[in-house]
Image (cartoon, rainbow, N blue to C red):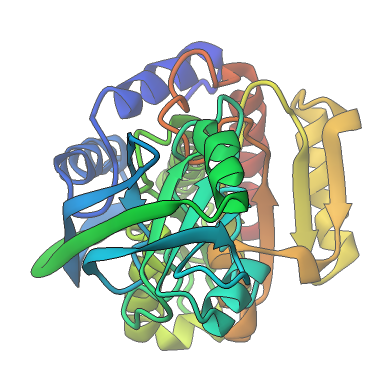
Length: 385
């Protein structure tokens, strides 16, 4: 029987953190996926890879030059490339060729948010977006329309440059802009772990993303460790002959690029989307340090309350647990809800969201992840045992 405590969590979070940058298609994607696959293999569970084809984006040049300063950045991955644009800098919506604005890294957590509307309505030849996060480093914004780029070229730069850019936007300073990139066919994979139960009972499904812009440790590791706890719980039930319904667990790639892995999963497993008794979405920032707020969202308030009580019973500070309306759901849980699935979602907070500073151990609360993982394991036992 797996003992889910802070030490068990710390070993796995440290291993994930050390496997490199976890952006889809990068070496750390493959390395962390292989590690995660090994962790998921236990008696009673069938583990397999589900290939996901996509076009990998490589950056050729991404920078701006203004008032004698060169600032390197990162293209918005669902905006078109631009080799070289010159003109005057202005606040977005002004009369200059290149507009400037500031947004947080969650500015495209779902479609239709203000940044998207700005881009679709912009008449600028290009846009510069400074990303504002703790430390004001470069915190990329998700590319919800990765397969359908739109609007003007967009370059993301670190928030530490916001004062400089705001000043020179106010002065209509001359600026040069480059955001050159290309794409090449590639593959990644989702991970599937299935514990077979009664075929006549609607299964329980669990999903968590496994990739992100950088190491993305607090962002992704909490959900992944809780996912492992769920899989181990299902395997233990199967071994004892107590699994009354099948448990399907999926760890998806490409969260940062419009949930590419989930798109592939829902296309391949269409009957499961609406056919599952429940989808448990283990979202971002489960067990981040610095802000312990944990949001619980479900269609039925009673189901959210049940998870709330499990979390509190397993030691998660009750004052930081918040039941919210299903309308606030984001990430893969948002997509599944709109496809008609019954979803229960957990999502936390992260002061270093999408930043390279989101690392182990400084930005991770191993005790919080352990409490979440124990609660998730108990939820699986209640739903499927």
